[in-house]
Length: 158
Image (tube, rainbow, N blue to C red; front, top):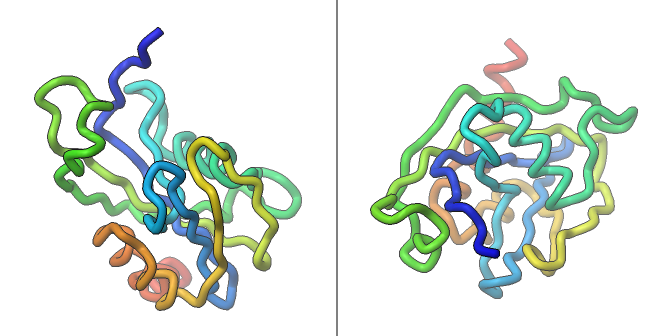
């Protein structure tokens, strides 16, 4: 059975510690492609905060709403970007879809947690200082989001 086309609206979740160590994960389908947690809505009416929490759980095993990671640790930046979908991934979308809208979030965890990767999606993970994590990301939007982390957190805490 063929999967339905992906919805061209997604989330990017930068997972970090208070010291700004950032979790990045390596894509299974493209060795050397490191990124933060990303994923598309499962349905058009899925709230973005639910998409973000679901994707974090699916891709890392981190449960938002647990004692260790409370719901308020997930921060919606109320910022989105549009980008052209890489040609190698366009087949996942309906014919003619070439752009995606990505909504950005961050997730504060108490320390560098052990993660459980979805093996069909990711093969490795690293916790790195935020600048090093940004340098490893293949996606310009992911790099920029990680580099904006200190500024976004400062604005939120004002």
